[in-house]
Image (cartoon, rainbow, N blue to C red; front, side, top):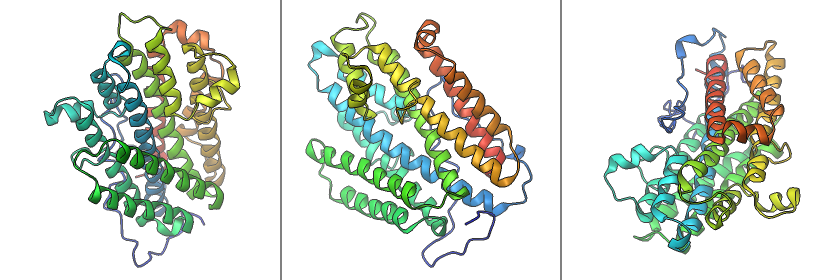
Length: 364
C-alpha cells in the first residue's frame, strides 16, 4: 500500500488530534536539547496524505519504543536502588532515571520529594508527565487509530489490547503501586512492545508504511541507548568511587539488563564486566540490536528504501549516512580517549539533527 494514496477511514478510526508532533517530545537535559522542528522549511512534496500518515506511523513507533525503554530503565533503577547503602545512593539512582527519561525538570516542577514512590508514579501512570508510560501508550494508540488501515490486524490488536489492559491495571492498582504489582506492570509493558514489534516485523508489507515505523523505532532506540550510557558516567558513579569498583560493577550490570544485553555481553566477550567492553557492545558492535552502530545501519537502510521508492535522496539520507560512517570508523579506544560524555553529546546532537531532517523531508 502506498502512503501517497488516500486511505479510507474505518468506523472507529478517527483523525489524530495532532498529538503526533509530541506534546511529549522530551525536554531532555540541557546538555543535548531535543530537536527543533522547522515546519516552514519542509519541502513542497504535494503529498499531504504521505506526510500525515507517515507522521503518525513514525511517532507511533517512537512512543512504543519510549514506553519500552522507560519500563526497562525503571526496572534497572529498582535493582540499583535496592543495593545496600555501601554500594550506592538510592536518591541519586532515582534522579538518574529521571534524567535518562528527560523528565528531571518536569518532576522538579511538581515539588514532590525525590523518592522511589514519587518517581515511579511520575514515570508510569502520571497524567501530569507527558512522557509517562501511560501517556506514551495512549499517544501510540491515538496515532494507530488515525492510520489503522495502514497497520496489520496483529499490530492493531497488540496496541489496542495493550492499551485496554493498561487502563485496567491503572484503574485497579493499589495505593502504593509497588513491589510485585509494579514488576507485573513493567513486564506487561515490555511484553506489549515485543508483541507489537514482532507483529510489525512479521506481517507488514515492505513498503513506505513499514519503513516509517522502522525509522521512528531506530531514531528513538539510538537516543535511549546513548542517554543511558551518558547518565551512567555522569550521575550514577560518585566522584570518590573508582571506575571498576564494586558499585561500578553493579551499575554496568543493571544497564546491560536494562537493554537485555547481559547474556549477549558474556557470549561476545567471555569475561567479567568491564566498562570499556560494555561501551563497546552498546556503541560499536553491529550484532547487538540496541547498539548505536546497529541502529544506524538499520536507519540508513530504511531511509534508502524510501529514497528509492520516491525517486529522490535528501538531507536526511545524507546526514544519517554520515553518522553511520563516523560510527563505523570509530574504536572503543578513540571513544574513551576523547571522553564518553563528549562522544554521547555529539552523537545525540547528530541523532536529533537526523530526526529534524526526516521531519522536514517527509513529515508535517
